[in-house]
Image 1 (tube, one colour):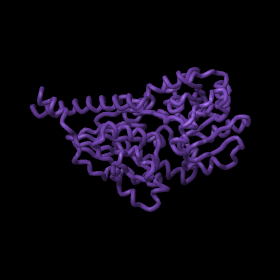
Image 2 (cartoon, helix red, strand yellow):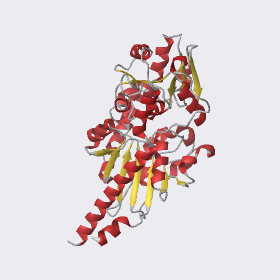
Image 3 (cartoon, helix red, strand yellow):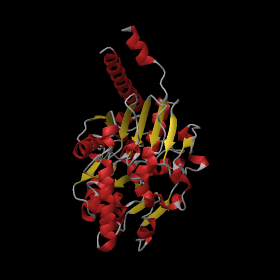
Image 4 (cartoon, helix red, strand yellow):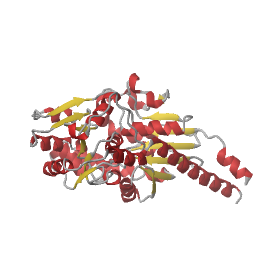
Length: 390
């Protein structure tokens, strides 16, 4: 027993593998909290273009990148290199590590590991655009027809074939929501431990105005097709008496900027402080995506701001209808308008909103992640010791 306990508690060489680091988003904030739990880990990522002033979450880590880092045009068009990403993640030499943690929403879990290594995956989602959201992705990017549509479908078919191999190298999965746990089972036929991601929000520099005096509605997040910011814009086009501010950047920004109504403003990327102040002063945060978990709705509640969200996916696990927000059931502009009208009739309690958000605090995330890893490491050590005595 003492031998087992000593083996289980022995310091381990840890590798942490993340998909890619082009900018700081929700998955990157999760990565920062994983580093808080495992500060000794070496960090790997297919590419890394995080600006110097935004790297605090990496805690001074030197990121070990793949050959993709040096390919032409990768900084702007890294998504175009998707066909090479399986090869890139398999090129990492992780043979010297005992414990490997992958933070994966695309290819990181496809790393190569051996029988004497424990590979645990915190899965933000299987690749949504290669699986159940393929047709939505193709329609929204204008690639559903013709030769281009055929070629993209062929590429995604190849990606799915490779992706079906990847769970075989994962010893245990954790998922960021019950919704994603179901998607993992659907795609990989693997169980997963649900560990909600950490959510925090910076304090504003000034006290937020009372809810009844707030005038601006807020959309916050990457401007990518599945976020459906286009639906938010169409909804507010029909509500000229209300104002929508859109914070974030991404490949959809140019398209969204075309024919904007005067009551909608695209603000681009803002500082963390400016985002916190916008969250605190917004009348509500509107969210049209079918999200895996959805950190933004929880950030809004942590700021005492109600949420108007599409009632599918992760929002069902974070928003309490009538208490912390309103959920609409159809992903269209009319349903969004009706939800905004409904939310205006509810007197939300900021204290109740913040209380609900505490379920997703960084402290709880770190404790649950540490417990899960220690449990899986103990099981792994026991299985090796048992095998050695047979």
